[in-house]
Image (cartoon, rainbow, N blue to C red):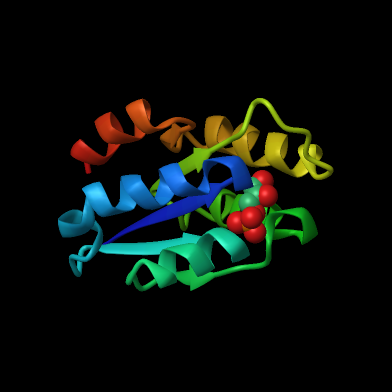
Length: 121
Ligand SMILES: O=C(CO)COP(=O)(O)O
C-alpha cells in the first residue's frame, strides 16, 4: 500500500482533478491510499475517489501532511502550487517541501512531473 498526499492551490484545483481522472485506474486500486488538504480533498471526493481529508491548507492542512511526511507515513506528494498567487500560510508550504527533502519523499509540484512520478509507483 502506497500513501499519496494530494494538495492543490485554488488556481490549480481543476488541473488536479484532471490529473486524478487521467490516472483513475492506479488511484482507485487497493494499492493506493490518498490523503489531502481539506478543499482539495473535497474536490477529490466529488470526482469519485476515496480520500482522507485533513484540515484546509491555510488553517493547518499542509502542516498535518508535513507531520505525516516526518513520521514516514507518506510515499509521494503531489502538490500543484500556484506560483502566481500569494499564500498566507507560506511557512507551512515551505515546511512541507523541506520535509520532503529531509526524508527523501518524491514531490511533484506540477502535472508534468506528477505524470512521471506516478508511473514509477
Ligand atoms: O492551501 C493549500 C496548500 O497550501 C491547499 O489547501 P486546500 O486543499 O484546503 O485548498
